Image (cartoon, rainbow, N blue to C red; front, side):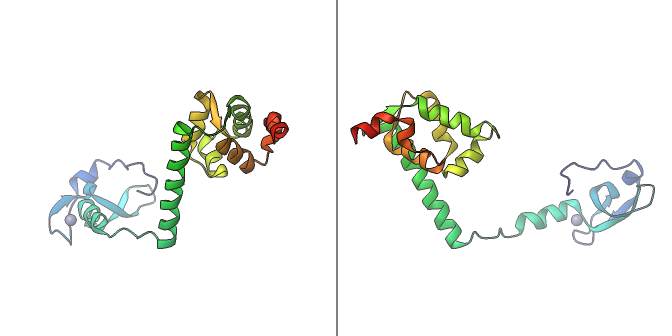
Length: 165
Ligand SMILES: [Zn+2]
């Protein structure tokens, strides 16, 4: 079913029988997908293979392999995200208060309310945003990355950085 909503067979489809040309079993029309309909919406013809056979064929169909360069990109992307999350948890590098970044993120997500989309925009896992929302501090590295991706200067959010530099 292309719509994903299972069609409810009409009563007569349980009475009419047909032999599947693949498994050779006689089954009611209800166990076949319709091939065509009459104008009143009733089934005119069913497919020659039963639904079980179609399901089996689909199960055995080899999955389309992911292109190598796409796979390499995904592996690399996941590794980066794990490293970023780990750094947020453990890094004892320079840390900044989270509040300005939190505000920036809340502003950035306001239009869509879609954290996953924002994550894609920032090329980060949206899990890292969730961490920022609850964590008191962020690493300078993450703050800088988020600012860069959102087109904000990290110095604008943390003026004290500029003074120190
Ligand atoms: Zn069959």
